Amino acid sequence: MNYQFDFAALLPYWKDFLAGALTTVQMTVVAVAIGLVIGVLCAVARRSAYAWLRLIVGIYIEVVRNTPFIVQIFFIFFGLSSIGITMPVFFAAVFAMVINVGAYTAEIVRAGMEAVHPSQIEAAEALGLSRFQIYRDIILMPAIERVYPALTSQFILMMLSTSITSQISAEELTGVANNIQSYTFRSFETYIVIALLYLAITYLLRAGFHLIALGIFPRRRRLGTPL
Amino acid sequence: MTGGFTTNHLVYLLNGLLWTVILSALAFLLGGVAGFFVMLARTSTMRWLRRVSLLYVQFIQGMPLLILMFVIYFGLGVIGIEVPPLVAASLGMMIYSSAYLGEIWRGCVESVPRTQFEAAECLALTRWQTLKDVILPQALRIATPPTVGFMVQLIKNTSLASVVGFVELTRAAQVINNSLFQPFLVFGIAAAFYFCVCYPLSVWSRSLERKLNVGRR
Image (cartoon, rainbow over all chains, first blue to last red; front, top):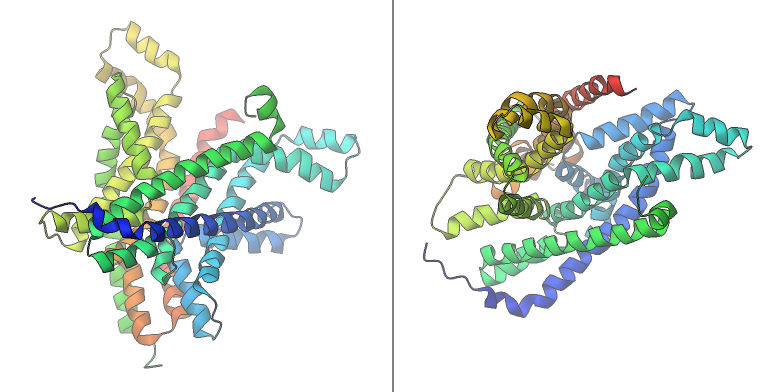
């Protein structure tokens, strides 16, 4: 146990660490934004009148939720390249993330939609709101507000999962760390540093999601209490 | 490119599946024991213990499991302990699951009505008696669905043990794919194996949850 810690060896690479962290945040934001839309659409499709649509969406959600993310990435990245579709690693990684986020979001939002009381919808129908208005104002927004904590935890887990995309050599934080530790041979220190960076990103995202909640849920802003 | 997928490959994958199951079981048992202590610390009457355990949980939940694996694998090497990948992977999974299980179980303990704690206190039960005879039996019922749900996460996350060189299902699939280069087939089969293990657990967790919620509807 006479190991000499040498964090100074990593100092010249601070720009690389920062760039990696930025890529991680970028990938997360893009994947979450698209995944959220897909997830909400799938959650709505799960309540569709067409049995085949419910079935297809159900299979998509269950398959994604019951297989590891790393296998999904390998399947998509190596699979697509084996049939001649090559794309930049960044897109392949974000593509895999979108598919993953979409399924989890769909399941969480569905749970929120089930919690909306039927009498609310009947009341909205009685007031002559259109189908679209009912979905937007009576079902979706309250549902999302109710499951917002679960949703944001899932998004933060997704941010942490971006580290897995380093396995297809995406240049995000973990990928950058893998490179740096191979230059410096300071693997232990490198991974401690990026563990702390991930922690910092986690807190930043939490703060960001809190601010977003204040912006989009007026009830929370006015009364200071969630639904 | 070179040869097709044979039964030998399938046996190799099945062997990988076996190791995935073993690693999951180890992670769940060890992580469960550690998680129990995390839960005790999180609900402790001592403020410093609550703070320290909260810090532990936030720290572990705030970093990717992949990084945790790397830190443990390289960290153990650094302090001069050469461990087989199975030990490094189990240790990583144990720490990971202790933080999550501890937090899940804390929620369950705290969801037992406050009056139950107060009543136990009025009966002059000690802190340990309160937990063992009054709170835990009730919390157990609430804890079962999320715990089973977390087992699914755990099984899926054992796939990350492949990065420290532990040959479980994902690693086995990678090895085969490197020689055959039939990713859709190989990773498709691996995904199907994971699905066969995880899906029944997901369904079980959901049905447990439904049973638990019957009273509330």
